[in-house]
Length: 412
Image (cartoon, rainbow, N blue to C red; front, side):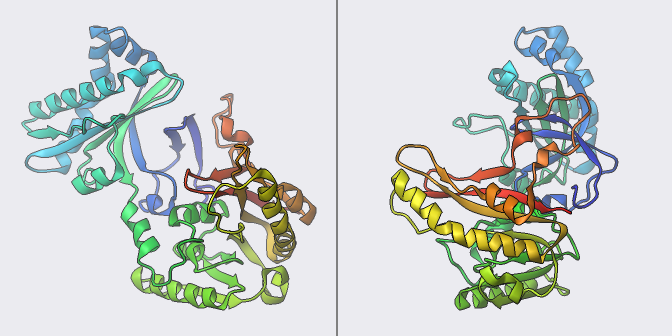
């Protein structure tokens, strides 16, 4: 949003959701441009969280009656009625901040809202079915696939309740993540390199962190088969890839051609070169606006290594990263962003081994970026714990070597 000059403030923040105040409605394709967001809802009402505590922890009937009115359930039912004909299907998803004790009552709250909304629809002469959940589901939340398959966005028929520490919001889902599009770009592209491939979701997030937008010049100097390049091309940027491996260069070109045809990108502007990234300035003769890349992260490991072996892996990679970061600084435009993956190696001691990429970047002239220290939050509100973060970890149980994603900026 910052890269697209959308003015906004974050008014509430938790691990499950955040609430954004904007001067204008978000553009329709925003969800397609995001990598880590599952749903976007338009808020219609706020109530103090203590009112829900009175209603569902202390079982106050008066509080429940107040909620039905103050949550504007009749207005939400009106929106559903106007958007569909005949019998409709609707659902309610409840999200909560970790600080609230209402998580134990979330299922009860979800059923309360569902039954009250059904009553409101019945008053309007509207037949409706309230979507339930499988018994093994631990949280009362519809998945994005369920919302997509039932067409709940088009019929204003998913209600989102977000329970914050001090205030609770209710609204209607206006956009939902489509995992099938990411899957399509992941498994249907003609050239694959599965062991070393980065997922479209992570690639999209990295492209966004680099502030890549339409018309900018984007570079991935370790492009592999082009996974990051594909996500950058979808922003309508001018895309440049580089790789030392000739097969990868040809594979990336094939994948970019495929994307151009599949997504009807008639004006797509891209090129892929073969070359050594440690001599980047001899291959890239123009300034680029943004760089996002995943260099070599080390060998494919069959088992979690010892700490000394993990340190050896990182130390052997350090000269490559050192050379690249200095070369990258030279080709990047002033105020441009570098988003870089470094190895996060698990060890048998349980303590991961990481590369000190901050030291390398500072020596090259870059400044680390802490994205959550930007003035995105309401004044006098405490910053969330992420405010000190300048990197993000992407690792799961099956990974022996994970990703640490860092952000740097070339400043004057």
